[in-house]
Length: 299
Image: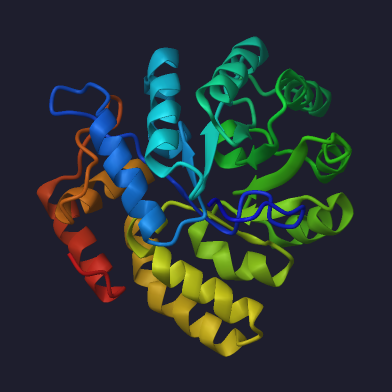
């Protein structure tokens, strides 16, 4: 069965933002996606986010997105939450994707801040509300101003939290002060969207992670989380420090690129990238191997 959904942890605690495996000729690898999803759940993930940035959502079609949600849901059943990324910078398109994801069996929706167009805070409020109004699924906001260009301000987060289906936020803002205030004032379930800040965000009230490095170290992330929740902060800090080379190595360049390279090194499904993303150079691959080895990852 899926982990229990509570107001405090609506999507569980440890989720991986899953890559979208492709075949050698660049098509969607449905079998590979199912095998990778099952592997990640076996490794200890409470949930999987599909069709997010790490899933190369800018380059997958709507039909591929629907197929992927169905395939992953079929692979993991009710053992884990399947959260579908539906965010675009076109509200109508996002609403269509949200309804599609609901029909395909998603347990929840991830909605990134509209990128490139730089809407106002009122525009953000209306965008997220329109998506939340369009289905019966719970919604996780995704605040990542480094990619979107516009942060969701604390006042807007507090306002959005009044919506009955907006239940969580994935925080990749990199600002612990703002996170502290937003957690305290909004009551949303807070998930770290920046692996390097997984432990610090727990300390100000986060409940879990939406991780990229979870492709490789989900058991270690669970151990860190459980140590912190049990009050063993020293052990949590030790685990955090042990994972620093992994955090650093996986983000020396774009995270999808390093993740697919690491999956290939481990013999797991991932496949090629779609342009404009390109594979690591041989030198970068060697550096990634050193980084992962320094963090205790067996290849």
